[in-house]
Length: 360
Image 1 (cartoon, helix red, strand yellow):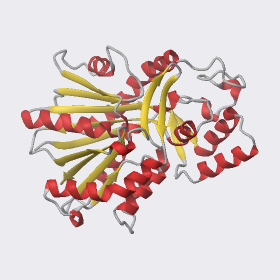
Image 2: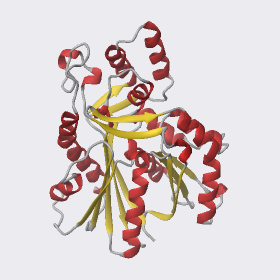
Image 3: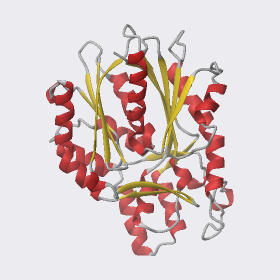
Image 4: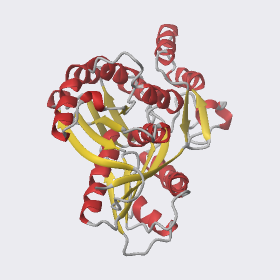
């Protein structure tokens, strides 16, 4: 059985208050008073206090902006090339911070595989090869990438790591999820763009998965996934000449509330575990309404999603890295004198739901 041994996280230096981002958005969108009141309401109801970004502009006066053109309409607007240049400069250092946090208490572990995850930046050779060099790993180290799969991609990477470790008990797989979502801000005043600018942020998380059963950690017990084709067009992520464009409609939360309890039941049944045995719920905080939908679907009453809510409040939605921030808090806070069973889930394009069950 493979085990999650350690999790490390990092965020960029620029910490923005949600209210400062609101002021930026009100200025950029040049909305009327009615629209400004609507934005204020949405931001106050977001469940987010602070977010991090590699872009300083969101809480600086226009004359100090570094990424956006300080003209009234942001023209010339940031191109895809400019956004990828920023990703190329920022992703590796942020990833290294998360990796160092992950490995700081791990002695003598030889990394045999590295998996990088991102839906906010791509190039070839990619981040995986760049990190191999920065970590001074042997050139024959296995490397691969999970790209453009959205918020559930960390679980997909865990599946790959689990397969490696089951095949080789000496495997030590390093997963690195690095997302710079704020590079893809879009200035058109649309529902999708408003939603994206309200929720998304930047961050990185690294996970060490080992095939050594004697190693202390969280044992990976089971994975389960499901695609709900009814939501295929309601959560999407597409390339454009001005960056990556997000589609995220309110129907996604409705579908999750309608179906998540049934999906959870199937996942638990496949793993041979009862719902009342789950001690921690590690749900991707895609947004306040997503967490409310899960809460309602599972009939929760006693703050079972507090870890997820706390991460959303402190960091916003960092796409694939976010659920690992939640899992890190759960891993650190769990009662090691008692059995622990963790149920995790994240959502992404498709509409795809990926789940995992961990035990310790």
